[in-house]
Length: 282
Length: 258
Figure (cartoon, rainbow over the protein chains, first blue to last red):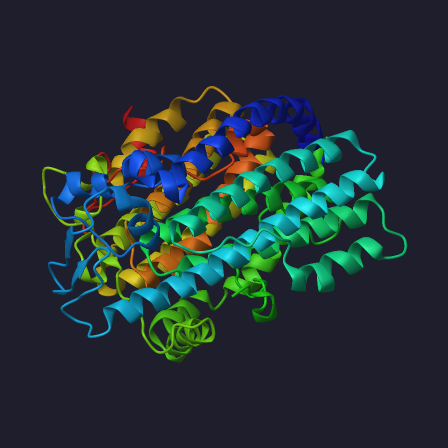
């Protein structure tokens, strides 16, 4: 426990200060880059770099044949050659980015729309979980019940990172042509966070457990999404966040002094604790 | 130290849970991917997609139909060998990375530089990596090699052998864990859905390992609590090519040679 309190306390403030300075510019930049009205002005490679994913142009560099069908890059890459052809050497599937035709499918336009709908549901749900976490950490900070400085500072750091995640997911949703969901997940707020924060005897320990629960829900939801999202790029994007939620959980496991709690309690991230169907934001 | 006692206690508890859970893992994994459960999971994915509006259409954009080398940035995609890095190749590479991590932790324990807590934590993490290797081997099927990546051992073995103290060894472990997480982050940008589903359950565990080691090492939180996972530290198959499964590998021997 001391390890994380000392370390996190020592550096969290500095990280947050730096984070706030950078994030103001980051959000502004994201807004500019993914603003539909300004897409034509920003190369796709720069957009992809912002999200930490390979750009379609990087794919082109490697194989000489581009890969379309990635919702995010199709949407992000409107400034690029939308007629680029995607060829699968082995499977023979050929897709025209933005053109919605394929040698395999007869309803490519429909499929593309349906895939986007699936992806958007996951993205909107993910953003709602991030907002839920942001709000929950804020409620915890405002409650006055978090009396351990290191815990408060860690909460601030984690909250800031969830803001980053929400912004990245929102940008991805916009890029995919969807409408971001900017509210806290209604189902989880009503059934998990609300009751936990309103419970009698709420104290710092209970808040830590709630935080751990939220981080685990997020991590497991993203681990699930990593196998459900329709494109490698989207799967990579969601797991760039899912891994961080797991790190948060590991820190919280280390801070919580309770029997049966360990920092890496399982060898594989389970998905049974993912956000339930009732919480999906279609 | 209270913190170390807590860590030790946690490691014991996790290990107990782990042993109970892992007793039947190999069979369960095989069943999971290739048996009735695998079919049920696939059905579950279809159901999920249907519930969110996809209907019965499955999206098969993954590299199952596409040589992954076509998707790889330069480091992963332009090896001299020109062998395509498809899902199978990546599964074999991941298996070998995991087995190399197991060997590295074993070699670290063998140095005598680690205290009891570090040995226990390292043993636990090695067990996790063994589980991960088994999972990737299940994906690779008959092509699994059961062999650690020799190039990784050649790179890290001497570093472990020459480490001056516990902190130096844990730093190597930290780099390996960060590298593993980063490797899977990169792989997710290439893999097909089934392999990605497994990889998505492993990446977070490597990340958690890094958090534990980063904390023990007294690293800056920014070092082990990044805002996003990235591919920046990915282990590159060009640098660490696949090891022939018929080759024998001995981390300790490799370290001793140096």
